[in-house]
Length: 558
View 1 (cartoon, helix red, strand yellow):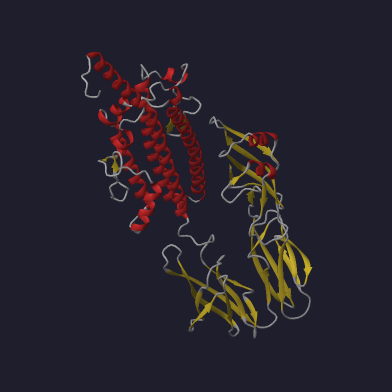
View 2 (cartoon, rainbow, N blue to C red):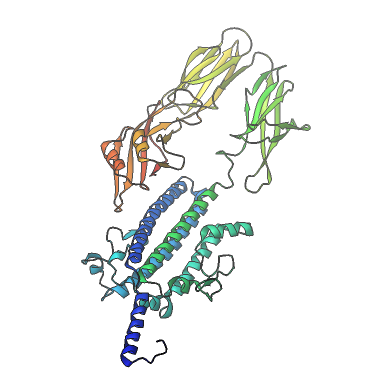
């Protein structure tokens, strides 16, 4: 029958069937459109959460800058440039997404009132947020009637206005900016390749000059560009979702960049606060016939063996080796009188791998017997508000007299005295005498250092489950790396700040260490990814002084 001649009626029916089949092929399944709604909504929620995390990163960065502008300044300035450039490209993508939607969907594209408040609003007013100079449109794709339209988006993005080509150029420009921000002349090709992969945002090139090929259809098809691959004959809802994905990738690249800039602040630092050669002596005065004993070290050094090259009184240079903790034992002799020594400690720079020299010098005096020495048993300073143990030794015979100016003394036996600084004193002088031999030693007075705030159960990454955070139930303060026993601080108050899913920022002021009802209510209603910041933490120590800690605690619910 296939060869039979068709009547005009049969030809018409066949033509109509072909048209019907074509229409079915062009029609996108409702289930697929609904799936796009779910995916798009999730991506928009993720973008909002990432934005909050990035805001916290900038806040932490700014806090470091306020504490040390000279050191952090160059990195903070770069971070500000990253924020500006990221705002620009995100605002561009968001505006493009909204322009595409409203020009296709709305009879009057400038009618924002109906877009927010119509019977089926296109924009979610609660989630369309402005953060600083950044605006993000939350489009209710389920209310977009033309979401399966692909002709108009193709005309807008590819054929007529060619907005996709413009978008591609913006992405390339932004990726190049991030690469330039994080690299310099010393960056190797391998490091640049790894960095390019971390940044992502690949378009028609991979960021290292290599062309990226996109194929129409299966392998071996015609090569097309990024714009056509992503936006040619794709339905409107897919275009919206893809643009939200691009915003997510941009924010991820921004977050990575800020992390690297913050890490670079301390890239050339050693693993301790201050780098420098120090000499700690038991006493600057020794009795004739006894050796002068001291230790030379790099403060807080705790790595592999280091070497000190030292000359005594301008004589031959000798080498001294440290132990595994970086402490270099020194022992000198010498006749009665003053002696000077000088030397260098050699250490490898952790960033450049070059060997650096750190010079130091010192002096001591050899005296006849019956000299006097006084030294602090803890540190070379004394602290106000607590008992400071000091040891007192003197040669000769007869009664030993120990007094102090600017402090009171009480004997603890065996040459140990507890020194308590008088109120308002800035310097303490200890006077020692025996049979006409007198000695004075001055000590600087310092306030007790501030403690470190913590919340139990919070991980090193700042994340904690809601139940574990509620179980902790308080903010605490502890002294870290402080040699005096019995020194403690009590938390007397703080402020907990948090932000709701709707974008409303709230805070709760707490008296004492324990979470109050307002805190607990906020924590009980928290969701995964919510951030809580504990700031303005007040503490009271042994010295009776109330202090506000410089740092804050940022906690994320996991």
